[in-house]
Amino acid sequence: MEEYLNKIISDNDILNSNMKCVKVNAGFTNTVYILDDKYIIKICSDRGNKNRFIQEINFYLSNNDNKYIPRLYRYYIGNGEDYSYEIIEKVEGVTLYNVWHTLSLEEREDVLKLVVDMMKSIHKIKGEVYNFALYIKNKLNNEMNEVSNLFDGVVLDRFNNIIKNIDRYFMDNDFRLIHGDLHFDNILIDSSNNIKVIDFERALIAPIDYELDIFLRMCYNPIKYASLEEEKYVNINDYKDIPKYLKEYYPEIFDFEYFNIRHLIYDLEANLRILPRFKDDIELRDKVIEVINELNELISEV
Image (cartoon, rainbow, N blue to C red):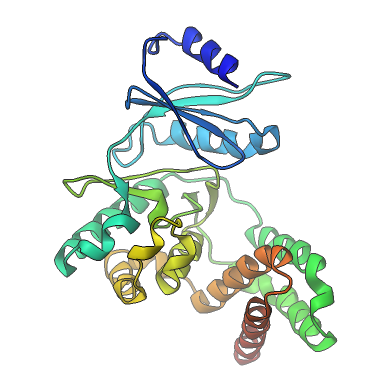
């Protein structure tokens, strides 16, 4: 990969071989380098992740004048043996997880106003309408097929009842660009309390309430999205008031008919998605059953 890095540097006039280069530990799908603490080179080293990588590039292109988004300087979509890559702005700051516990209530409210403004700036971009109910149903069915042996016939019948009724809960949709993986580990804050959002490989066109899927689950279980280094800073009591401020400053994102049912369906999908990796996790399996039962009760009342 270092040979390919050298080619990237030589091919782009904003870079040069004299720049200090530091490799960053960034998971398995991408190889990341920081140059002179100014540029980030992100290489899609797992070609199986290429489609998501392209999604991120498209997100940058749609938001290149957005003050909350790092600047995309250069990009290349590989074909054949070449790897895709992007050269983006290295922004100052630490994740919100690192500082949230140190902020006063007033400072937290001010930061959440910025988070809402950032969300709105992304959501203003309209997208093409598609059958979102079918998208959710396909995800649920595919995920349940992997773990159906963990549940008895009663639970599976109730799950199928949810699938049968999903369409009517997703009639009220306004399709916009959303981040798709919004939580405090993907929001950076600098010493002046300015924020930037990062990591756009899960960006998609969807109803805006889908943005709350991960963000609200972070509020209710904040340690789930924190890195190992950040876990020591997490106290659930510091996060319990975030939904209240979201409702105050961004009421439109909650203004969906059947909002509670929609978000229970999102929650069910999220838990089913990870269950194949944790089939022995009784608590997670029981959570899936609990959500299925709650959804069936709500469906019977509508």
